[in-house]
Length: 172
Image (tube, rainbow, N blue to C red; front, side):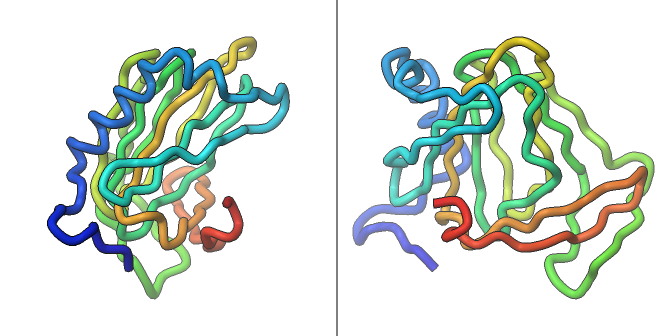
């Protein structure tokens, strides 16, 4: 577990969102991200208070798939283009399950054009997509504590299945 430096407190969801907004508004930073026409690209940023932060490029038609961020809180802001987030308004059990049947009222959808973002709490399950057929999107993400792992899910209708768990060495 990562703790903030002595004399400082852990960044809040609001502080992570403020950081992501400022970074997303930094035109020079956003322009510095190398973009790939086929796969997502990312650069690690120095986040506030020991948080983990990323500048991410999304080619047309790419997305994350369903996942969560374990015990981390987070925030993200679209810096260029538009992202769409699908999320679940339900707290899932963290361990001991492989398949869940979701109720009909848990699905949420958000459009996040350039300059828009959101924060989220622990165990937030979502997928983020660049649905554009032509334009890249770029976003800034911040998490605290730094991601211990990401659980990946597959979804068919109202059935959510735990797929696999990624560790930091898988994406750093």
